[in-house]
Structure formats: C-alpha cells, structure tokens
Length: 225
Image 1 (tube, rainbow, N blue to C red):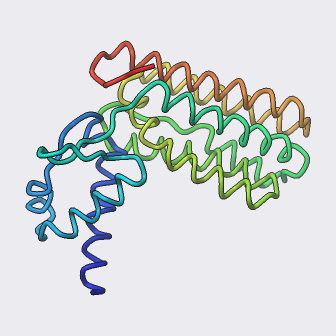
Image 2 (image 1 turned 90 degrees about the vertical axis):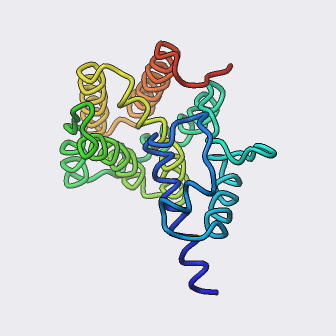
C-alpha cells in the first residue's frame, strides 16, 4: 500500500510540475497510457494522480477521451488576483510597521531577479525569486496566517507566472518586475503602512493586466471572460 501511495505521489508531482511549467499546455489532452509510459509505472497511480489534480482544478475528465489540462481563463486570473490584492496589500501594510533591516536587504536582493527567455533554469529562478519576494513581504507582517494563505495563492499562481515569462517581452517583464519590486522595498523602508498597501495594489494590478494582455495577444491559449 505504501508503495502504491509513493507511486501516486511521484505521478502527481511530475504531472503537476509539467502543468505549472506549461510543458503540458493549457487545453491540451493527456492520456493515462502516455503518462504511465513516461513514468514507467502502471495506469493506477497515474489515474489517482489525475483525480487529485482534477480536485485541485488543474485537470478535467473528458468522457471516453481521457483528461484535459484546464484552460487558462481571464476569469481564473481575475478571481485569483482579487484575493491576492486583499491579502497581500494587508500583509504589506503590516510589514511596513514590523519589517527589519535584514528583511529589507533580502527583499532588495530578490527584487533584482531577472531571466532569459527560452532558458528553463533561468525562468525557474525568476519565478521562484518572485514567489520568495512576495512570501518575504508576508513574513515581515508577523502574521503567520497571512503567510500561509499568501503562500498557497502564490503556489496556485505559479502557472500564470510561467505563462507570463514565456509570452511577455523579456526586457519589459524584467524591467517592470524589478522596478515595481524595488518600489515596494523603498516604501517599506519608509515604514509607511498606507503607502505600502497602495504600492502593492498597484503592482498586483500591473501584473494582472500584463498577464491578461499577453495571453490575449498570443492567441494560442484558451481564454474566456
């Protein structure tokens, strides 16, 4: 039984990672047979992994055809950013009061992250640094519940970050992210809660708009309102 759970977990983490990094693109069909061959395992753990991913909203079952990676929709993005804006702006406001010089220095370092398009390791680094930046702001708030909620939302947002890194102009995205993250750090250094909340909301809205525009312009991802 433990072996079966281990194989299911292996299948789950592999498929989930492929979905998040868009190597299994939105709206593409996948089969238990193909995945079991790739993973060198039976169909049962693959089927269980796909069921788990379906519960998390990454996959949907198509009767008599198999499974499909759920498409990215404008509504998905908008809904997620509504929640992120609420939580992250609150965290930034609290962080402005509690943040330490050491935490600010770490944010400065993370704010300088950039990537090179078509280099997987570079994109991985950029997406990871972006996630660490936002979690670090949340941690500086001193509210562990906020940290847990924001970390979960960032995990859910990861596929959007990879899509943005692949579709948007690399120079524009690097510059925009660096400038906006640096602006957040500068305002946190002033320990101004209202300004920290405002700049975080501005950054989230900029990210949301840039991502949606990139998806619409690409024309190769399923998008609905």
